[in-house]
Length: 83
Image 1 (cartoon, rainbow, N blue to C red):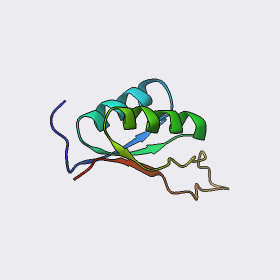
Image 2 (cartoon, rainbow, N blue to C red; image 1 turned 180 degrees about the vertical axis):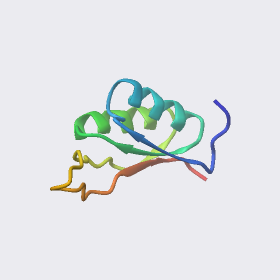
Image 3 (tube, rainbow, N blue to C red; image 1 turned 135 degrees about the vertical axis):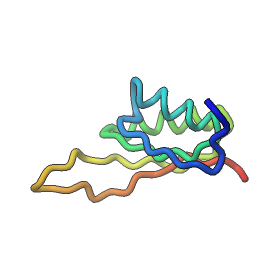
């Protein structure tokens, strides 16, 4: 990937699989990455891995699946890079 410093990417399903891989690759290439997913523990593991790769991080927030009866109310968190 290219240098993504100054860009923001929002990755859904960021706790495992393709979403995890995409989040880590985007963070590695300098993007600010917004992580969302259903399992907080898995998101925290991605944040820790990104931190080991040099990103500064904030805690992820679990989100729920939206439906017409109950919209998602939580705000996702981000992986940020030092200036």
